[in-house]
Image 1 (tube, each protein chain N blue to C red):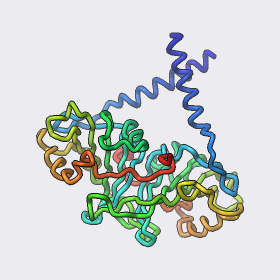
Image 2 (cartoon, rainbow over the protein chains, first blue to last red):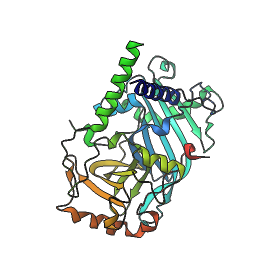
Image 3 (cartoon, rainbow over the protein chains, first blue to last red):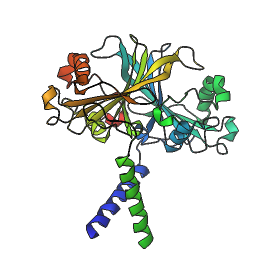
Length: 172
Length: 172
């Protein structure tokens, strides 16, 4: 029993350390901290933009995944964070008619907090980190106007382009 | 302290229950059990097959993700499970030049166990569940010959088509 409690303590300490995740990546110019654990988040969808030849995976933190699977995405709940990982497209190594991710471009995020981000008119905080060295995008806090302008066509979808991909786990 | 141990016990019981995951989905004809938690796995890559117009997300269990991020994928380690979720492609709702997942097609899996699956010549167990009702693919245990034939061009890549997508977390 002593041994098992010791194991449990280690387990929980491990989880805490992973979540605290001190990062060497600087925050976005609007103060949003880099979400160090985003590559461990679960999948919401994927997309292939044939105009700029990029492949994307759209991920969500736990709050976002719960909302996506419950179909409660308009509006998304406060606390939801959606991340989009973007790569230049390339041809798959051994299947000539498949497109796959090539060079890493950036990871970009929307943080839903309807009070904190009310002033920008969207209820979302916006952030992007560029390239394998994850350099914050933008030079001052106004950079997010570029994000918002691009997302304006989907303001009636709570500013989110992505429709969660259908999964059997969503089948009621 | 009493309270904290109680919490830890609940936490661990919760994890065990989630992993045991009793499933109403029948096993594959070769006896492989349906991996009930696959939609909670992390991402290895994505692909777009323009020949049959499908979008895919490739996921891995913890062993597979660890191997992918460490670049140790030829061979993949025993215990690795790779899952591919496949959807028919559709046009994104509000971005005409983006392709997105439409109707769910199937989820298919490779289970690495070089001893258990030595007899089929690949060291992998193969399984697929089709449609939103997750019907097992194949009528008898020989169904996996169809999987193996298709994957033969990548036998020197340990039978795996997918190259793990580059992520900063993989940047050493």
